[in-house]
Length: 386
Image (cartoon, rainbow, N blue to C red):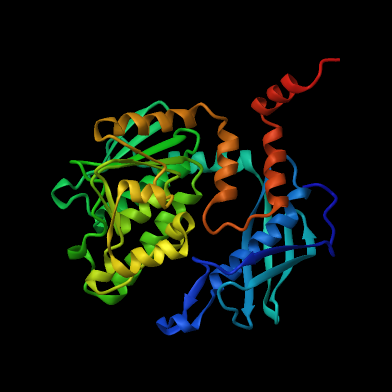
């Protein structure tokens, strides 16, 4: 860490309360407010942004603890500003005071510690832990996921054909495990292609597999939401190869991917309302693609969209003939493998749903990438020779 960091330094970060950052108190839409977890996230990002310019090239900061008081509610659409101030710097640990305000005044305050780590040493430690624990072998251990590797590309097939690849608890667990393996070794796999077996992507959550116990059903719903949100934050590029049905939770999975390639015969929808309940997770991810108006229509009507209609909403990147679907998906994946990996990772971090964009954060990502061999070589190409 550079010696430029001093107690008293401060910085601000703004956000507007949007989808994925709220909670409906008592289930009432009229009582929807900025959630405490979202406030914690905003405070942490504010402190992280303040700290970034004072880090060396091989350093990153990680949260150690956060203690906040949520003092007032603020509704959707409001601008919220977090201000972080350095209180104390002790070796590699920095203590911040962070205050959040909206247009009417303070809505929360707290203290947050971040530790500065060497990313190379951290990666070495993770590799040692992985070796000691015997990480799941991608190609052999899964029963409901069929994985095929081609270099740094991994094609993953959802394999419950008799249930139209509906997501049950076992398949959810395997997807969680897969993501854990991918994140433990981010350089081994750069692109993941998700597809379904037997001419369907997935019919969504397996209704018959939803637990009868209310607490277990709630936990499963939250796990699935966290899983798909984690996909949007992962360093790999994810491509959804969509044929046949892509409904409910499967639509959320596809939306969490970075590219969606659809066959002409695919259909999309959020049928939960026809079953008697709302989409219960991941709508923030879907809305980040199609907006509130289209999301409201899909959720309220439960109607299905044809592939071309889904493309017109921005839900699908490309619609192709059924016979060319795999070819086009592989082309997208191959293109990603040809681009600089560090730039791809930074773009995913900056543009992930729910992330708070700031020019300062983007500039820091830009500066990190300028130190890579690819960037240095291209800078030399465009600079006039002396």
